[in-house]
Amino acid sequence: MKRGAIIGLGKIALTAHLPAYEKISDKIKIVAGVDIHRETLQQVSNQYPEIRLYDNLDTMLENENIDFVDICSTPKTHYDILSKVANKGINIICEKPFSISLNESISAAEIIKKNNIAFIPCHQYRYSPIWKEFKKMSEETKEQKIFAQFNVIRMKADEGYSISNTGWRTNSSYSGGGIIADTGVHYIYLVYWMIGEPLKITSNIYNISHNYEVEDTAIIIIETKKGVAQINLSWGGDKRYNSATMISKNAGLYYDGEKMVKNFNGNEKIIPVPDASDKTHYINYYVDLFKEFLSEIDDKKNKDYWLKEAVNSISILENSYKSAKIGQTISK
Image 1 (cartoon, rainbow, N blue to C red):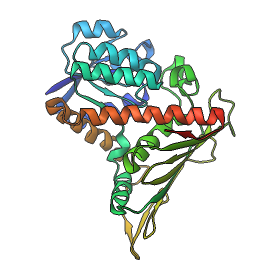
Image 2 (image 1 turned 135 degrees about the horizontal axis):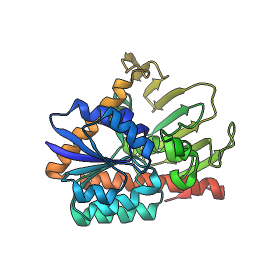
Image 3 (image 1 turned 45 degrees about the horizontal axis):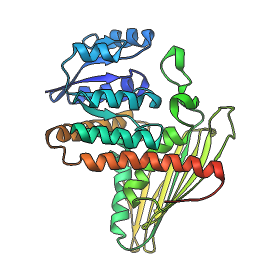
């Protein structure tokens, strides 16, 4: 049984991480939690009275014997927490984005390597049956180049659970950016996973519906040796909507948010996909991720890959903002 602590007890911890841990409670147990907001601690205490709660990370580390921490705090805090925990030899799960700058992410990766601990980023979309089909399509096309497009529409930025900081996602000092730094990171690491390291990145950002200090809409084009991917993101829509496409010379995969159709060498079939409104599927992505993390604690065989993916996701994120700022394509 591995014992862990969650750092940051906001929405993602309460609606996804803790329910996922409950599904594998024979293997893993959250014994402690840390949050700086008193009202959040009270809420968690009411829901999970068995978890010992702290308003200070150092106090928790002094009092608890744990195998890992799960970092769910705002992105600006990730580096300091990672550094402190890693230097104590404690294994780490970290929510996306890994950090808010490439320099921080490189430094954090070096600290994790130096202390030889297990690490995995919360890149949970990789465990979705939908995106596994896209990864499979990329592999099946072999030497053929592909074009992929991801469309992600929301009506606004999600609000945080803390009464004192509900709008942290639209405050760059907490989040590191707008929709690219939030939802966009998922599709950045998916593109990296599906079609490899970028050769060129081109991005534009906009505010079309909200007066956020950060962008509510973005277009990112990533070119790799395998092909081209376009990520379209907006918090400015009239409804929540997702779709995605991947095509090559002899194949196509089309997802419209409800169904998926695959065409390969002229043979078309419908592929069953989860109901996007059923949140149990989303929690199961975390279950699979946490199971993989348990394997990492035992053998650390994929630690270097996970660090590479985490760092590269921040590199692409940073270069997306750089491209939008200077109005030019960034070549790697």
